[in-house]
Every structure is written in structure tokens, then in C-alpha cells.
Length: 529
Image (tube, rainbow, N blue to C red):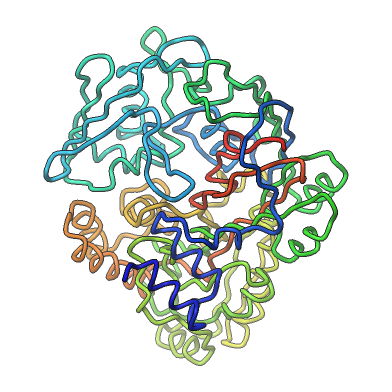
């Protein structure tokens, strides 16, 4: 019996919900026969059509946004990079790794050397033909002591890059990495053209070239006429407008100002779906909410009992019911979701337990604990409501949380990674190594809790190079447990990606869940019906 058959049996016996089934089969990369369960009467068409100008309402951006991939700060730029640029690899809608700018790739026996053969004749938006030099210089700039790139920690696993002719790049790694090609699908690794010895941010090989760019406000795109993919980029042009307020986005869709909007609040999704001419798309994935504590600062530093108290002080079941209205799953204080390949389903779910929270507070010498928790409604729909609910739950354990409401503009540059305790979220990552390396690795620029755990980091390095799948699963399970019990973040919920669109917009039968909006590639993959 295959793993898919086992999951179908669990559904038939009532042991697994339809939503959980979709989450777990996402990691298998297979057609399930239940893919339509992700959609609320979604418009699907078998044959895509070209043409039209699509208008999009986007939930978040910042005036600090940049077209330089080493300065990624928001989903607005992430979306831009994925539709304007191309990476060596991509995560396909079915969850499988696929070539993109690379035509093929292979490794040596211990995964310490990877060879990528590039597509030939790929044209940048400025007319330059892509070659191995563009690839090497684009990735090399993420490395270096002064690099602030969010994927620096991944790029620095590379000890050498060299070309073997104009269309082949060979990567030598510091240690084996079975997931290395997956890492190169990151939006920050979009390949830039080299002109006069310098890379040119804002120019890519993707389906759409930028026509205008107003950071944190608006981006306009025009279809690249010489795009190397004939089965993508169906719209003639697109305009993405930042509308941080969810109500304004939904009103814009209802009135016809927008054709597509992202981040529909779970609390209003069902009502919006009842509107004539509007369809809501619900895609399970790896998206999760976090409340990171900076463990390098008092009072969280060297005080795991305090961190445990705060983890026991949140009623996740109530939050799932009231904030997400069931569009998600319970989090367990680690970032690996049921959709991930090595998800440890046997780790006990942490319950809401005010008495245990009090016990750990007393053990920590922090009875009557008070602290400020920063957040912004522009961060994600329901963020402030989540904090207010947390405040209510924590009060029963003798914990007083003060809500620090922050503006959405500049949140990622001024609050996240800086405030002692704040709200955050992650779209998740397609592999455990990527998620743990970027979000929890000791040397990562995006280690949002500033957490450094010796055993965890030893396992991180070992699991990355391990080719025995059973052993690898054991190591990732231990890492999930360490993160759950000793990490610096409260991770209460995993959430579905909920978006909405006019019935004039058609979507493919399978929609990716590795990032929101079809893996951010909705401009490339969707079309007008």
C-alpha cells in the first residue's frame, strides 16, 4: 500500500479531515483526486488564453522595498522577483522540484558537487542572452561577511562556483546537501544580467518585465515577448497595487477595481464567496504564524521556562476556530507542517494549560510577568485580533500582555528582528532544511529569535548531508522536538492561503501551496477565461 493509499484510508475511516489530507498529500507531489476541495467553485479552464490587463490588490509592501534580491523585505518584492525573474529551479504546482533556467542538474555520490546545465538562448529583458557568468555573479553576491541577504546562509554553503563552457555551472559545496537544488528556487536567487562587470537588479528573464516600480505602492508589468516558456505568462500586462487593509482589497474586488486579491481574512472568506462573480481560493500549505522572542535579550535569554510558560498560555484551538474559522491547522511551536516530507506526526500537540504556564513562570521566577507584544494589522489579516486573543488567554495564567500596535509600513525593517517580542509569519519552505536553515540556523540573517542551540545546529548540518532517508527523518524529528521545547517562538497555527478573484479569471487545476498566490507565480500561471 502506498503512502497515498494510506492517507485515503485514513480519510475513509474519519481519522483524517479533507483539509489535513490535502496538506499531507502536498508533500507527496501526486494528484489526489480531491484537488477540487481546495476551491470554492473556482473557475478552471482546460486551455489558457492570452490577452488582457490584470489588476491585483496586494496585502503588503513597504517604502523600503528594493529590486535588489539581497535586500528582500516583503511579499511584494518576493512576488515581483518570481514573476520578473527566473531561478535555476522551481517548485512546480504539484510540489515537485523542476528545472527552470537550468535544463538539468545532477550531483556526485555524496552530494558535495552539483552540475547545472543551463537552457540556451534565454533572453533577459534588456536583450542580453543569459550565460554561466550571469548565474555565478548573481549567486556569489549573496555571500560574504557584509552580505545582508536572507539567503546568505544558503549561499555560504558553496565553496566554489565555476563554469564549464557558457552553459554549464558546477557548484562545489562545503558539505553534502541533498536539497541544494531546492534552495536555488528561492526568489532571492533570481538570475540577473551582468553588464560591464556588474549585475543589474530589476532585470530578469521572467514572463514579465517591469514597466514601473513604486516601492511599497505599485508595480506595473508587461509581458516579455521573448520569454523562453511558451506555456506561461498569458496576460498582456499587469498592475499590482498595495492595499494593506483587507477591507479595501475586498471592496476593490467587489467594485471591479481589482481582478485578483490576496490574503482574504478567514473571517470573511465565506461571505465573500457568496458574492456573484467572485470566487475564493483556499490552498493548504506551509504558511504559519509566529510570535518570536529574542532569546539574546532579557527576559527571554537563558530562560526557557519563561518561554514554555508563554507557549502553554495560548489556546490554539480557540484561535483556529475564531481567527482562522477552520482554514488551517494547529501549530506545535515548530515550523514544519503536515505538508512537509519529514513532518513528525507523533510529537504530542502542546495544549492550552494555564496551570502549566503558572508552573513554568514560578520556576522561572517570573510570576506576574508583563511584557509588550508588537504587531500590525497590515502584517496579516487578523494579526491584532490574534494578539488580543492571546492576551485574554494568557491572563488566566497570570501573564499580562500589552498590545503594541505598529504601522504596516516599515514593519519588516523597523520591528521584526529588532523588538524583543513581536508578531511574524512565514510562508514556510518546501524542505525542512531550507526552513530550519533560514529561520532557525545560528548564522542566518533571518533567525528571528536569534536562537543558537548547539545540538540543533549540529543536526541541521548532519541532516543536510544525510542521504539515508530513514536516518534523515529521525534527525528532522528530533529537531522539531528541540524547536518545540527549547526554541524561542510561539507558533500557534498553520493557515491556508486564501485569495479571491473575479470569475473572469481562470486558474489551473493544480495550484501551488509553497508560497501564497500559486507559489507567487499567479501572473505567470493564471489567465482570463
